[in-house]
Length: 282
Ligand code: HEM
Image (cartoon, rainbow, N blue to C red):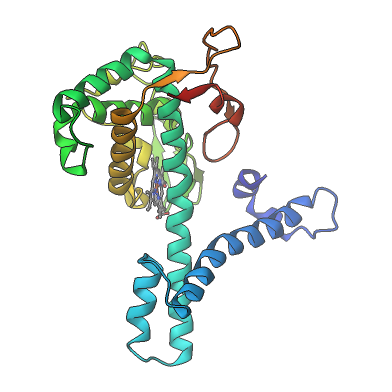
């Protein structure tokens, strides 16, 4: 429904009572959900600050610095709105993308135990099983880096990226694209182009050989959280692989249950929960 409205924005003028006007209700409900998503954590930080128990955070740091400056209430309210929405945008853009990439990484480790063994061997060689990895180890673990790159390519959290509108008319391979056209980049296809074995999970394709930067978008709207995302994925996967072996779940006769990845529809590509029960950390 939202994608449909993106393509035909004039539909927003149709009254809610009109047949097929159900998207207005959908939009109203979605707005409430988004307001809730950004407001609840913000209010919680304000409450914790009032009780003196707030932990360090983006919202806490900005609000405490502002409180010391003593501005008028209007300016402070406007400031609070900006902090609330920037924090909410970061959370909304960061949480599902990073979490779902990580879920997929755990799933492929169970599906491809030979790749997991290679990653584990690299970690064991560097850490000598005496300590856990740190971010400073990132440059010394090329297979783990390639593993993350291949997961980002193989799974692609946002297969159609985000919609954008052309600022002026353009020509592309003989096609005329008028000004104001809404364009959805087919990132899924970009991630498959040029490989004969694109459906294979093969981290080796990225060993010393570039990275799938396209998964983080293009141009001015390129994901501002990509460096944080790469660090987060690195620390999570290297901690997990240094500490656990990931294996397929077993049935009552101790036979491995094969994993058939299933995904849910939506803006963000998400491994469905029935599959995530198909493997274990052991
Ligand atoms: C695996 C993790 C992530 C992936 C795959 C990802 C991917 C993307 C993509 C494809 C876009 C759209 C870019 C475009 O339109 O060209 C985007 C936008 C964005 N991302 Fe990420 N992202 C990830 C993690 C993060 C993190 C950790 C943060 C922040 C803490 C973040 C913050 C944002 C924000 C704020 C935008 C909107 C930028 C704008 O519209 O101008 N992302 N991301």
